[in-house]
Image (tube, rainbow, N blue to C red; front, side, top):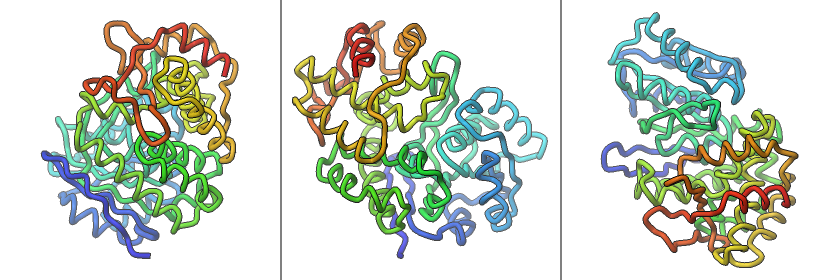
Length: 361
């Protein structure tokens, strides 16, 4: 299968997202062309490093820097340890980083690249469906804090994103479903036909069929690239990519990250659609259509028992909030977001309505 490239035409740092099967075998040549450097360092969690880092390091003559896998490691402590290791290795400003792995290594390594020696270039090599369709594209980097996800970070665009869908075959089913949730979100906010195609193709996608995966990754990246290009630093329209994430991230935080990210976002999308329907913003039946799609994909659609205080605290810390108001990006229907406010692309929602709807869903 021929690799396909989606352009992210940012005015101050355009790059390509290359999607294909078996790309890791020639990753070194592509990385050197898009991101030339005197030295390379690979950052990965230990699980991904054991699978892929050695073969990539040989191609780039790179050092490998690892940390334990899991969302719990996405912290300032990990950032400090990696930064110190790079300094000890002597990596200079003529060096470059390679973020290898899923969303956590991608976000952490990107944040290291954004801050190391005041910023050095880097490449994203996502190995999960979630990272391929979402976190590797757009330049958001950062770490979590006790108050919530992604509260410390920076915008730092990669020079290249290299997505080899063969790596998805090594993922457990829950991780494949998490990526499918983000792809379905892209359909929900921008392309109803794509949403329906994903549901129809769910068996192939969850079985890691390369052709089905390439089609999904290319379409999702194209949707995200169009939004990111219009709003690179999240001043307005980029908020549409956070549909379902205000409630989803708060659920993750309140569960101490025992609730998987994909499960949390699926629940968040359903809850936020129900809120939109109650407010008269979202077309009736939208929440049920989301709920049915997620159920057919083997995903939960109701939140677990949550700590109300932790949930409220996490809602209050969401980055979209303004003036102490909880603000949600609400759907108008499947395939379109509400455009009542095209300055912030969000709607103020009473906190009690969010909490009560989450508990009742």
